[in-house]
Amino acid sequence: MMEAAVVLDLSWQPIRFHVPAERTGGSLPDSHDLWTVLWENRRRLLGVAHSHPGGGVPAPSHTDLTTFAAVENGLGVRLVWPIVTQDAVSVFAWRGPGPLAYAPAPGSLPADKRSWVAELLRLSR
Image (cartoon, rainbow, N blue to C red; front, side):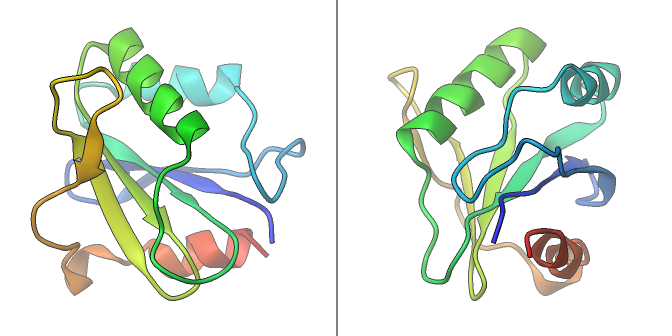
């Protein structure tokens, strides 16, 4: 499996799926095209979900945490960061006080907001 991502609007609907050629099973490369999508949609942006190959309960890597912080700093807005595995979805958000203090967001992602999960997993294959 390869990592893939999806940019989500405030209604949890996909704005754009991100599947760069240089992706691996453990990372998504920086992308000017993705940054442009984030910047142009920053007022209606809820977050960016990405896949982690395999199963189990997902958790952010150190690279994920530094990426979350950098993107939020660049956009000037806090986002949610869902991570999807074959059998689970966890949503993370900054909880503070430290710059990398991201933790599971309260509650879970409602089933009616998961329309993009199957496509993200398909693109991860």
